[in-house]
Image 1 (cartoon, rainbow over the protein chains, first blue to last red):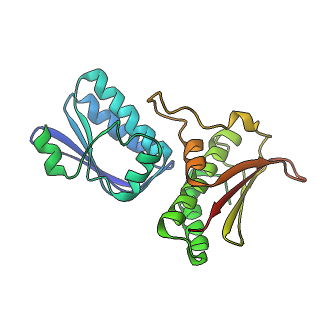
Image 2 (image 1 turned 180 degrees about the vertical axis):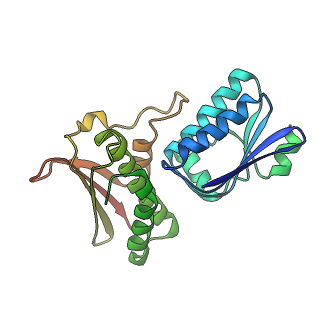
Image 3 (image 1 turned 90 degrees about the vertical axis):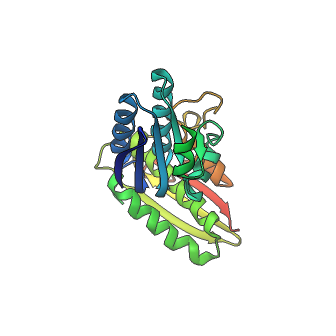
Length: 109
Length: 128
């Protein structure tokens, strides 16, 4: 798994690439929580995630809950079919705000 | 295989290579891969308590129109009643792995190994 964090229109865009599994989820957790703690809205781009497991999904839930506490926005963008299926199986696809594209996510902010 | 998180990707690749030639659709294969991955995570984290010296044995066999996955570890015996999916009403991180196993497979049950101790998980998926 690799990742990047960049700023677009004042929003932090966190992108993950590859497999977000138990081996890499501690790293993904730090990236997500550190981003939310910056106090800005966060968009998580999952378009290049080839696999995400329950530990990766747990990271998203934890970051989402932290954003609720800090009063900042947190949404997923460009969720590919494999990742969406995991979110659906976990009944989380209606919990997260999901935008079809990064542009849509930025416009929504 | 060694019960370590750095082996999980190899395990997923091996499972995919084993089930795809059996006529599984891409979604069916992905379901089996996910179930095995989550079950291995449970073994690594909960059965072996992250002790990297543990071992996992994986066997996949075709029985008619079903694929049967056998996953064996040699950790202290797990109480099957403690490995149940949690309710999803409460939105919180963690505890999703067992739920995903039961969502993706047609059945998943612990069977007492005939010898050697440890735990044996039998998971069945109808080929579709």
